[in-house]
Picture 1 (tube, rainbow, N blue to C red):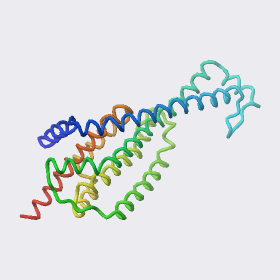
Picture 2: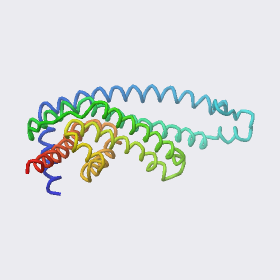
Picture 3: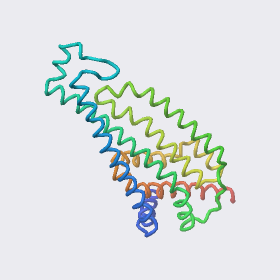
Picture 4: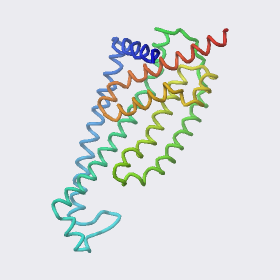
Length: 250
């Protein structure tokens, strides 16, 4: 706990410096613009398609227009509202997932810059880069397992109360693993990276990843603090690497 509090304090001090504030603001502005355009465009297009489908009964993959009883139920105001609310809730959730993907993209693009700065400020470690082919191989493996877990979880999207938990399982797996690959390859030597990979980054990394993932589900909040998350993870892994190097010396 003492070490975590130290890392929180160090990360806060690093985050509120001119360089990292600039790095936080620029991707935040770009992400807000892109997500805003996406929400407006998808909302307008989806709203028009849904309205037409509810009026005609033709949902593309099945046509209910020939079933007068079902059409009378669908055309009822409350049912119409409930169906619309369900589809809009699904669209909103997809936008939340998009915010996680945007967060991962930001992390991947800025991680080398941030980890280099943190290393120079606090640790001065000589980091041997992880082989690029190995990073690609691990990333492809994670992506395939993510798709497999997602397919297993999709049926539970329609189960009340369970859908929000189950659909987040594959996305948390993706977030956690990609963060470990991205940050580990920039902060750890090869032997220490191998060990960290087998341990899923260790308890501190995994718990922090879960907390940061939950925060990232709030689009603007997650995007605003993504740089802080990377700084925090960097401190955890650099400390792990420095202890490993000290152990080798002694």
